Image 1: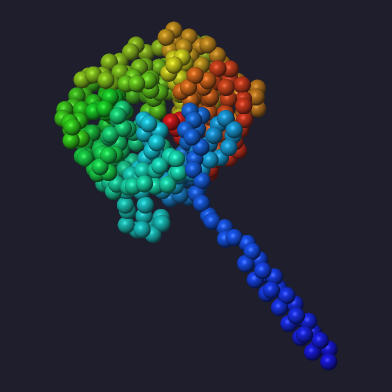
Image 2: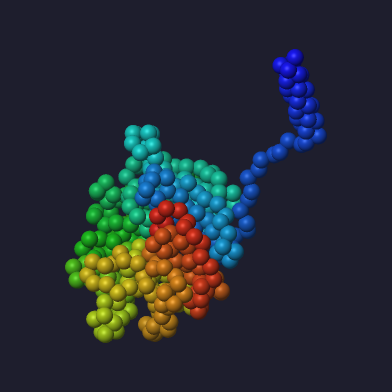
Amino acid sequence: MLRNWRRALLMAGGAAIAAHAAHVLATEKAEDLTIAKMPAFSPHQVYVVDVNFSSMTDARAYVLDADTNRFLGQIDAGFAPGFAISPDHKTSYVATTYFARGSHGARTDVVEATDNTTLQITGEVVIPPKHAQSVPSPYNTALSKDGKWLYVANITPATSVTVVNTATHQVASEVDTDGCVLAYPSGSDRFTSLCESGKALTVVLGANGKEKSRKLSDPFIDVAKDPAFVNASRSGNTYWFATFNGNVRSADFSGPAPVFGTPWPLVTPDEAKAGWRPGGLQQTALHVPTQRLFVAMHQGAEGSHKDPASEVWVFDLKTHKRIARWKLADQKIDPLLSIQVSEDAHPLFYGITTTSDVVVADAATGKLKHVHKQIGATSSLLVNP
């Protein structure tokens, strides 16, 4: 008898649950899943490239709203990517590698175009499987001034640059750079690569994207005594290169031959003796409207050029004078590996710490606004559209 009662109760309960479920299905509308659009473009959107050394095939570019400290989305970026944003801010380009078996197997190199309003991939171009697999640099993947040509630096270890037509989504050419690396664009039809001799190789393209002419400069970097960081800061066709020992030299790549400025020091003789010098992965940032150069500085010795910054020094490019010195510890900011600054009239300063926190500060005063904790695993490059 007890068993019958239990069976009856179970059957009654099951019927009640089924009836309730049927009622819910009849009265509730099905939920539609949608993909939200990105907020309207803001000069304070910042892209953080995470190479993720703990999972090398799974790099990403994260998008943050630096005003609200809000995480907006991400772009998948494959293995050791290069990253660039179009001049009109509408498209991001990732040059990367995929392997058929995840971390091994047949290799395919591609350039992927992403719509920055949706963060959806809109197209891809298969490129020669040679793209430089290195810590991201602003110039291992870069765009011409008009956005027509995308330059992808190659190392196999032979060096070259793949030229991609962004309008037709086709490879236009591959330019042999003869031992020189990276691609520093100038204007809409030329780029310059840096050579191990300290010289600069400038290549001019024709309308079809193929090499039209080239010219090799005299040495402008003393690679033996004072090497330069490759992550130069840019204003138009002019680049400012900081050196390991704390000097700066400009290079104007707009003409048939580069025009180099006179080197000037970031440090006084006493500061040099105390070991002050630039360091990190992205060592300088330039606010073009005010011509202020931000430099990540640390105290070290020969070989410490990758060490993070304990201070940020701000210089006037016109006078070469230091106008501010921010001691990060005073605001409990961890040492910085990479820095960047927005280009608007009310600029923000960005920094990546050794623990992949993204620091946002007022670029005029250095006052901390907020910290976005641990963006990615090994974030290394900041890109401001």
